Length: 65
Image (cartoon, rainbow, N blue to C red; front, side):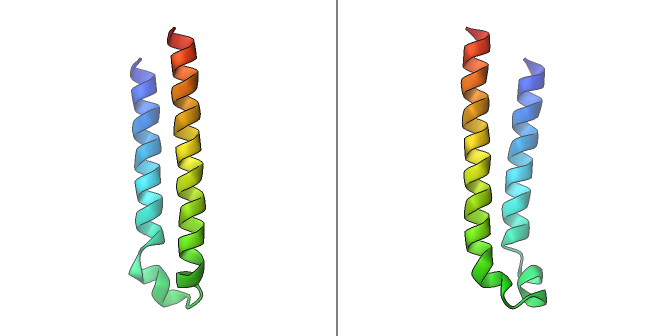
């Protein structure tokens, strides 16, 4: 059970960190095209994390039951 909690926490930290880096003003300053591509890339990454978390929850429910 503790391993599941650790995996979820790590995934959430990774997701939040990804979004923070993606929205960072420092990144936008270094690459002028970054702003236009950032929103698309962030939405893809967030979607990936959501799918991964949903898949994990489904597997967890199937294993625990």
